[in-house]
Length: 256
Length: 256
DNA sequence: CGCCTTCTTGAAGGATCTCAAGAAGGGTGG
DNA sequence: CCACCCTTCTTGAGATCCTTCAAGAAGGCG
Image (cartoon, rainbow over all chains, first blue to last red):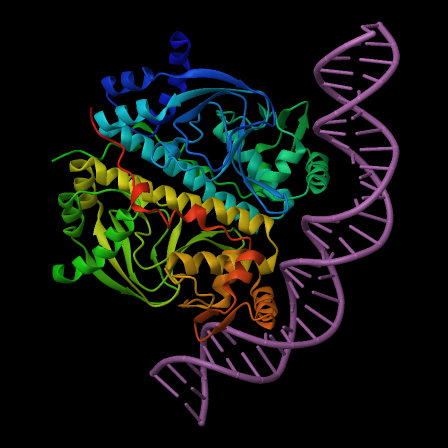
């Protein structure tokens, strides 16, 4: 299976090197990480709560939600994880699981042993730094979700989530105003993520559809008026740290 | 001023060593970090948005809020930072500021240069690991805030925030059912943190007071029926990772 | 004592929820 | 290829939690 892991790890590496500077040797070390692929059915927890974990999960295809649960069963998704994400990278340094991970659609993951990641991180401090930095981007997204759930009405809330996801998926390229991307997620999942009820999500989507802001059919999202949606949702992609030019990539921990 | 920084850094070090294993030498390195103290007036931004930062802020006394802003001025506090917190530790690895920090009451901070922190982290990988782990605890708190804001009604929301803050302040010791701690924060701040309006916070506090769950006067919070409040707020302190016994402290990145 | 912030109270309005049930869609087996 | 089933989407009507607006009371500080 090793011959398959490499191209998948490349995607993860691309993510790291978009924000961090890594040497050729360090990059090779990451690409050589072991891992074994696994297919997960939709709506299945693949990292249940309360257990110690000994591996991290790299998403190859599909989409994953990080769930927190309420006593009365009300669910809250606190993060979407997209292909190329190491969705529980934090567990490398903190193997006590505090939230569950669930596949939202059929999802392929690569389970990468903590031991291997730790060995690379220990050997190459710049890799540890890059991983740490990646975790911080996830944290910035969490903070933005608090604002989303706390301070925006249903239309802006859903719009913002779509803008964020489109950006993270790399669907927002060039200056096209017509964005299309795959989002294999149900309206109920969207409700869990935005802290709304499925019913209200449905009505809100209709409202957005009525203004040609969102067109969502068969798991394919189309945003025909990107600029208008960005404005409605007050979406500012800065927190995603996605557009870092080469001059913004960092490598700061050097012994001396 | 150096003779003053050491005892303050001790508090930060205690926080780190409560979850990570650090050698005597590593601990000394942290205690020797330079820094200069500064007093911040209430309601003042001391780390404004959108700038590159070259230092992190250790809170010595007072309380700090991490603010995200809306276009229309609606504010959301995404985190409280308490004495002993390095409130923008993440900036060590990601110096682009994405959220503002504001003192909620008169606050004393210690500004610690990134350069110094990075030097220690580079020299001692276990320190980098401990810092990274500390950031992950903050991230877990962010995730819990999403649940709080998204899925709990006003009473539970405020109750949960109080439970969390009491726990983080170390006010929940032993099996006393009567918790008292200082919380120099206005009801408006509480509204910004819970995504409610100040008016509704006020009414909710009255409701909690009516059931003897919360007693809040002159910036001093008293929780006379801790167990009942915990249940009402469905507060589970696991995510705070505060009670890690010695056997749970970690040191995992070792070259080899 | 006076000012400014913070807290408190009332009444009306609105965004979202709850409950319930029907329609549509997608996959599976005969 | 059709029939069936189960999930997902859609719709309606009433209830509610929280907000908005406005204004007065209380508290802290110079």
